[in-house]
Image (tube, rainbow, N blue to C red):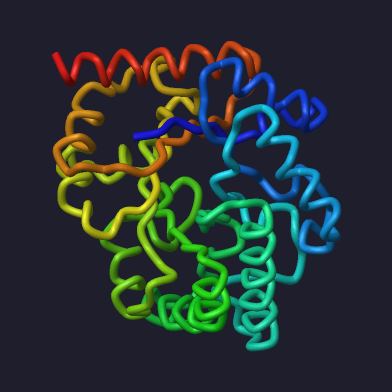
Length: 274
């Protein structure tokens, strides 16, 4: 397992300083929120993309991929009634795949709760059909760039569509394409009511990426969730991907969050081996 952190909590700092702080805290990877770089991140030119990648590499970091894909955008929606909006969304995801690959990343996390909500009257089955349509529209382009789109279940407080790991896996199975996998997020899985180790073991075969956080919106070790059984389960299924810290409450400060989170994850790993 390798540790990364989502960088948007550092977004008030220049990118080079973000990279140095993340590396100094002990992380090997960084996960990027595209909106933190540009209003239209897909319009970043080749030299800008190369500079972003180079500054991360200079700090000893790997850019692992992108998340918050549709945040702070307009005109995109996974389950829109408008076929033109759905086509535009598929095209934008494909363009993000190009950005991801150009930065050296191999995965994109599809969360974006506001851009996937089902409108009143739209059934879950209809929403799933539309999601499959959009994802299929960018699948081959993502695969050609070596990028996997990881579908992220989120809590019912955040969205009314794809709330459980099984919901995401249903769509992944329908797509039946190498470009799609499951993303598991601790905060989100806590809402399912099933012990997290069970969910980790049940869906190990389709899980490609993992977010570490807690229901209090802070990082591991900063809330009530016991991460020892979580890392025990990840070890039991031989998970070898990234565990990336994603927080939503920045109030303790980015440096404290980063250091306390990685310390808690290392302690959980050590306890697992013990």
